[in-house]
Length: 408
Image (cartoon, rainbow, N blue to C red; front, top):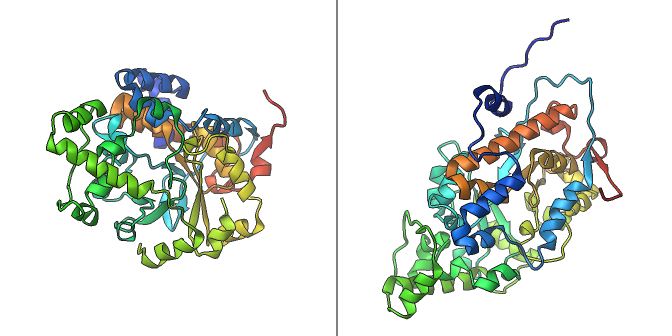
């Protein structure tokens, strides 16, 4: 019996094209470990910027826990299932996306590459740029989400025409990050990576300044030059940058902790892991994340938190009825990681640090490779596990995964 070839798709064609064209990938490898080393080498003259982006809180144990949590779960392959035609599309908040892989929001990308967030947005089209600039770079069909770092001042809180609002809840204080403390490295304090603030008319009015449009971070970012220019030479622009940075840090990392009751203000004014409380307060979805291990040292892995959350009958019922969407972030490095997170119950999976590796090495092309290789591996893994669509595996932990009770 002769089988018919499945139709080609751009995801798995990425693998085929490398072999057929005899041309290695843009980053020279698809090994995440090697790509991370290449990113470090690319940033060797700006190692503080590298550590700011790729480092974690304390001893980095939470970042390690994120990755080890994935190691504890193994995929169960199933053969002799016709999954020749696979569909990895998924619907999130009523919008159909070509895959469940989403780009995690990461700030101050301008310290890694001059094109910064715009390169990432263009690659993903789908900050060190304004919301409006990133939305434009996402293209006319890009579905932009706005990540809110909750300011202390209410009038600064809401400002965007994005499709979705994603509220960050763990940055009321700066995390304890030894690698940044050793070099006193905080770009925000120098007015770098605060374009969300400097493009806000309300924030800039405090300084009797107009909002800045199309502002770009100068690459490379050299904090000592800015400090010397301000404090030793009296440079007005440098002094203004320090002043703006200090004020913005005071807004975002104010030490003011929010409660569930505060979400009422957001819900009433927005147009556009206690998951059960999120349901009760009318929140549309949650992102299960520990900020990539950047905020608390010694915390549980994000995948373990997702596992606990999905044990709740109320959460599963709300998810099934469409009242709650569950997304996942932290520790994702490969396509098989994406499959594991989906099987655990996530409907969408965010990838962060590998995207920054690609950006640091090769700008937009580097980001594009990370996205392509991750989705390609996910597509292949899905098929080799015997499933024809991502919707078949979401929440099927007991069927798709085996939990190892021993260390390899």
